[in-house]
Length: 360
Image (tube, rainbow, N blue to C red):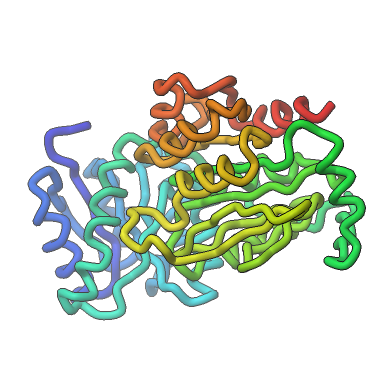
């Protein structure tokens, strides 16, 4: 990491630019080296300067954030980009598209320049700027979502869970849990469609995200996957044929009652850095299912997941970590690997294959 992280800001609002600049430069390790009012202006300036990180507004006149991002990702050496997005549904859809196109991460745009609003994103933005310096930005080859040719498994009515119970009684592992953060949406887009419609156990995903973004992400993934993908809801009874995306702003707790595994979606505890927190998902799964779990730790900054693995692994859960080369940020999987709790380290594209092997 450089002594000073050089940041270039692209935003059409002078008020927001000033507020974000003050926020960034309050950290002595960050220097704002310039700004642009729109994408065209930004690309012109980037011919003569080389920032470490770019913050890029989604909605701008003349040239918007998506078109600007495409140009940045097509540079001989793409620069890490953090998108600055509104929290509206349209804003969420465009932001997810930006992540698929190669943006490292995003923050939600403050609604005003008041210090209380700016300070809400301060910790998040500073952490993401510092992580982005270490990221390997790359464009996803295709961000087009189409209906898969494989027919989705039909929903199993709650009153008839015979298939579910047979599945649960027939194998060692009852559930697949995936913990993921920075670089997550495009990574999930790559691996989740590889699970066949007859995959025998439910999959639950804890993806670090601000509120308002996990439902659009689940809807987009649902169009791509043979399995049904939905945002997790309180009391969901877990069924094969389904992928449950943890609701942003809440935690996922895995519970068991009788033959059924279900989800408790809760905001408690509120004082955690991440929502949903992977550690909480892993820890509650260890309490309810013991070692009957396959746990996967994927790309992301920090160490979330490792404390939960300390509860799962002694009960003989099978643990997979994404490798360094394919991780956008090699933080969470690195800490998990260094803890000695990982059974297998595999590249992103091989993760589904490694999981499916456990059921053959």
